[in-house]
Structure formats: structure tokens, C-alpha cells
Image 1 (cartoon, helix red, strand yellow):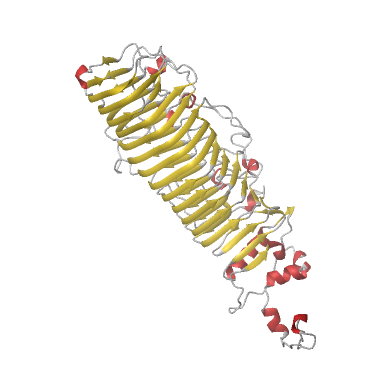
Image 2 (cartoon, rainbow, N blue to C red):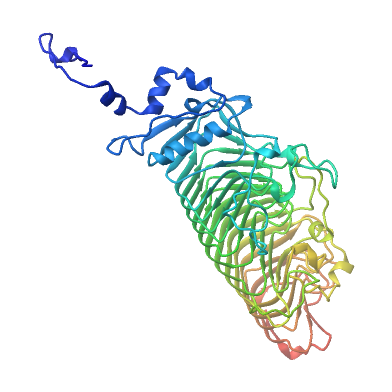
Length: 578
């Protein structure tokens, strides 16, 4: 068959051009998904089995890698009831086979179970498009290629609503929504299965990636995951941009959870989670996080295990966070180094900073084949924080209980035995605390030697900063103030070596035993210290190994007494110049 095509009017009325195309050549020259959209392909929409056999592109097709694969053309209904898993998967498979392109989720609510993403596929969710996780737990399956081992960083499960394994060049974007219906995966009572029929590690993450490269997730709304929202394992070259993550329907609603990732960048995201808002576990390196807002029951930036280094976190707003915004737990064999936090506002938080170095719990044994952990070169600059006593998390689906160490919290730098964290810097840091601590709480000397959750040491003996086994501590232009009286010291140093405190503005209490208490500490220089409020004693020195403590200038006149020496401390260890 021959087809004559007349030239357009711009060619002149007396000019025409005959182009001969065989039917076969013409059909092979067009995009089948695009053609299906044009012709309606009603015959596909009427096939429940979704046995769609759209013709693949020819090798010489110039549209390879650029085509659009509308999931409705593969049989997806989008009616909020029909299970569209196979249709979505077929669209992704076709896109991948044709060397990539865009899989389009148009307007509609598309119910799905587990979907595998593949290399070179962009999944675009339109503004009125929703991928809705089914509440039928049988529609989810594990990604067997993702190992589950005794390693605590990998044993949380390997089930994803959307997942990819060893895939490259994946993008998920668009203004649409992925809704995990996570509340249906919460058990009504202990030992009772939730409505979805699966629980624990069998629940699906919103997005699960393992050993992927060049991964981008951008602009979408991730709502009510049944587990973590975004979990990325052993992957590189990652961008998370402009995401809105909201999940407060199960206890394990993490926002981002990175495990042993490199070259990952998170920006312009808003996260409201129930558990860790942005966890970095395993060996995470070359990470930037900026221009984000976070709120959660637990921590925001949580570090645990492995080698975390070369990381910057900046320009973030943290609010209503009742589990310590910045929490670092470094056990044997781990190393945290070269990590910077800057320009961060914390409003209504507990904590606000906790770094633990050593054994993780009171039941741990000190014997291990791993070398001691290392925490070194951690800086905090431009931090403003308002610390409060925790209250029920707004919009959470269930109540939370709080430990005494969460109700009374402070900045905690906690190493132990012969292990020291090194070179910890606080500059331009201003923290307001709620007060309410008692003299009995401040009198505690035997603080538990545990570097796990920040509240496991109990109520800290200081309302502002508690530092144990720190070498190279710098406090520059730091202010610690109270909204109500607190009978604990503002700062307690225990085995601190080589510290410089300059421009410290600190509030005391008339009934506290001292404003600052130091024990077996050496090489400390305090300059330009200013004391606010009233106090009966500024500095109490305890222990027999204190030395080279120098106070040079400042105004501590509100204190009735300057120095006291207890528990074997010698007056010669301190020099003073007003």
C-alpha cells in the first residue's frame, strides 16, 4: 500500500510532495505507547490479565531513551480499587527494554503492591496521580537480592513498595503522591496481626534501593509509609530534593535512612516523621544535607556504626523533636570524623546534641576484637536551640512515653574509660533550657558508662553541657540560659583535657552547688566568661589529677564565691586573673 501526503500550504498551492511509506515502515517509526495514547487502545484497558504486547522499538529508532510510557496504556485503571501492580510493572519493563525513558503515572489513584524499578527509568507522578500501597499484605514480596545478615544495619527487612537492586540512572519525581497506608500495618495489640496481615520486617518501605548509582528522588509527597520512607543501602551519587515526607502512623516511620552510602545530597526537603528523620548508618561518606525542615519523636540526624566522615549539615530548621536532634553513637570499630553542623535553628527540642563513644548499653561487655571507636573533628557553628520538656508529638497516631533523661536533657559528650573523643568545637551556639532540675540530680557523680541512647545515662548532672573524656574541646561565643531555675550546674567536665572556653555567657542558680564543676581535668583556659543570675559558687574543682586550669578575665561577680576544691583537688591547679 502506498500513501500520498500533500505538502502544507506554505509550500504553495501548486506544489506537492509524494512520500511513499509502507504501512509496516510507518508503524515501526512511531512510539507504540504514544500511538496507544492517540488511538485510545481501549482493547488494552479491557484486558484484566494485562497481557499487553506493545511492540518494542527498533534498534535504529531515534526515540530510544526518550519515550513516555503511560501506565494506563498498559492496563492500569487508577480507580483506587483495582490492583494495578502488573500494569505499572509492565510499563517499567517496557521502558527499561527500550533503553529508558519516562513511565508516566497520570491523574488517578493506582493501587499497587511491590514494584521493581529498573535502570534508566524515570517514574513521573503527575500532580493528581497517586501510587497507593495496597492493604493486602500478600501483594508485597521481599527483594531476595538484598541480603539480611546479623549486621544491625541490614536486618530491618528487604521489602519495598518501590525497590531497585543494582540499578543505575533511576529518577522518581513529579508533584504527585506515594501513599503507603501505613496505619493498616500497625498492630492493635501486642501479638495481634495488623489489618494488612503483615508486621515487623515484612512491612514495605516506601522506597528501597540497594547498590544503585545515580539515583534521584525529587518533589514528590511520601505519605504514611508502613516502615521507613526512603531507605538507601550501599549506593552512590544520590540526590533527594524537594521531598515532603510525612509518616507518624507506626513506630518505625523513619524519614531518610542511609546505610553505607557515598556522594549523597539532601536538599529542600520537609520531613515529619515518628522515628529517625535522617539516619546515617554504616559507612556514610561525602554527604551534604541543607535547607530542610524536620520534626520527629526521635532524633533527626542519627549516626550509628561504620565510618561516617566528610559530612556537612547546614541551613536546617528542626522543631518539635523529642528525641535529641543530633545523636551520634560510636561503638568499637567505628569512626566519626570531619563532620560539620552549621546554621541550624532548633525550636522545642530535647537534647539537643548527644555524642556517645564506647559500649552501647549497660549489658555490653568491654571485651571485643574491634579497636576502640574514634570521634574526631566534629564542629557545631551557628546553632540556636530552645530546649523543652517533651510533650505529645503533634498529629501522631499514638502516644509516646518519655524517659527521665529525655525530660531533663542537655548537650552530652560522653566517652569513657581510656577512650577520648577529640577536637569537638562549639562556636556561636546559643541554647535556652527549660530548667526544673533538682540539687539531687546535680549531685550525681557516678554517671553510667554507656554510650547508647542519650537518655540511658539517666538525668545528666548538668543542665547545659556534660562532657566526659573529651580532648580538645572548644567553646567560643556560647551562651547557656534558663527559662526557669535549675539546681544542677550549668556545665560539668569530667576528665576533659585541653579545653578553651572563650566568650562563654552562662546562667547560674543561687541554690546550685556550683555554676561549673570540673573533675580530674587539665589544660583548661577560660577567657571572657560572663555569669548571669546569682550563684553561691562559680567553679568547683574535684579530684587529685586536675592541673593547668586558668581563668583569665571576665565577669563572675554575681557569684558569692569564686572557687572551691573538693575530693583531693589542690588549689595550685588553678590560676586566676580578673
